[in-house]
Image (cartoon, helix red, strand yellow):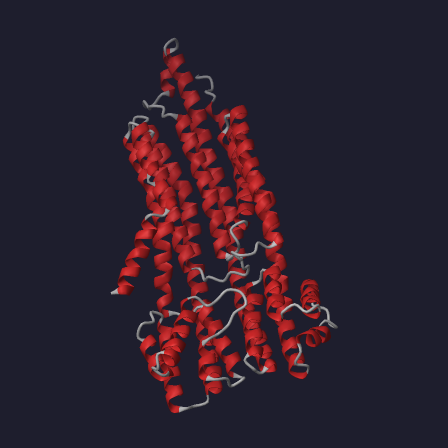
Length: 550
C-alpha cells in the first residue's frame, strides 16, 4: 500500500507543475478577451503543456520497462569490473560512484544488500524478493539469473562477463531498431511539413470563396501547428536517449557557466531587438528574424562545447585502456598517470595533467577524479571513471577493466555515428523543407494580396466603365489579409521552433544547440519569404494588368 500511495503522491505533484498550471491561464484569457469561437482553440496550449510536462515522463518511464537502457548496461559493466577482484558478495551489490548513479537499478541493489546482511534474508532470497518488484523486464531477468548463480555457487565473474556481452548485444539491437524507427518517422514528419504548404494554399483559397471568413483559416493553421507538434513529440519519444554532456547540479562547469551567461544576454537582446524591429517595421517576418538572430551566438558556443566533448570521448577510450594496463604494473595513481601522460591524448591531456597534479600534491584520489569528471563534462568519462576507480578500490583487475571499458565505449561510439548520420540527413531535409514551406506560403499570400488589389481596382472601374465587367467573372469577398499574413507568420515561427527542437532531440544534443538551429531556420525562412515576394511581383503584376479590348 505504501508504494501505491507514493505513486499517487508523485502523480499529484506532476499535476501541480507550475508550467502546466500557468498554461491553463492561456485559454481562460483568450476566451475572456476574444469574443469569438476561435478563442476556444487556445485550449491546445495547456494540452501540449500537459503532454510535455506530465505525459512525456510517464511514457518514457513506461517505455523503459522492457528494454536494455544505458544505465543498466553500465551497471552490469560496473558489477563485472568489481567482480574481477572477487570481493565479498555484499560488495557486488554496493557499488560506489564518484559522480551520479544508476537510478532505480542502484537503489534496488542496495536494498538487496541491506535485506541480505542487516535483515538476515541472505542474498539468494533477497535478490528473488526484489526481482519480483522490479518493473524493467531486462533487469528482473538479470536478478533472477543472479540469484541462481549465487545459489549454485557458480563463477560470478564468468556469469557477469556473459551477462555484459548479452546486454551489449541487446542494447545494440534495440538501439538500431530505434534508429530505424526514427528514420521512418522522420520521413513521415518531413512529408507532413511538405503537405503543410498545400494545406495553407487550400484553406487560403477557401477563405476567399467562403465569404471572406478568416476564422476557418486561422483554426486550420492552429490545427496544422498542433499536428506537427504532436509528430515532433512522438519523434522525441522514439529517439534513443544518449546524452554526451553531463550537467552537474552541484558544480557548474566554467564552460557551461559561460554558455548560461551568453544565453541570458542573447535572450535579453532578442526581446529588445524583436520589439524594436516590430515597432519600426510592423513586418512579421523581420520581427521573427530579429527575435531569432541573437540566438545564433549561444548556439555556436553550444556546438563548440559539444564538439569539444566528442573529442574528449574519442581520446578517453584510448586513455582508459592505457591506464588500466599501466596501473596493473604500477598500482599507484600518481605513478600510473605519470607514465600514461608520456603519450599525447589531445584535448584530454590538460585535464589529465590537472588530475595528476592534484594526486601528486596529496589530494584524495577520489576527490581528484571527481573534479576530473566534472571538468570534462562527458558522460563517457563519468561512467568509465566511476567503474575504473571503484574496481580498483575493490581490488579488481585494472587491465581487464580498462580493456572492457575501451571496447564498450568504442561500440557505443559506433552506434552514435550511425545516429549522427541519420540526424545530419534529417537536418539537411528540414532546412530545405523549411525554406520551401516559407516560400510557398509567401507566394500564396502575396499572389492573393496582389489579386485583391487588382480586384478592388476593377470594382472601382466598373462603376464608370461598364465594359470592365467582363473581367469580373464571379463575385468574391476579400478576407482580412492582415490576419492571414500574421497567422502564416506565426505558423512559420512555430515551425522554426519545433524543427529546431526536433533537430536537437534527434542528435541528442544539449538544448542550447537548438538556439543555433532557430537562428539559421529563421534566416532561411525570411530569405524564402522575401525572395518570393519579389518574384511574385515580377511574375504576377504583368499578368494582372488588363490589356485593351478589341
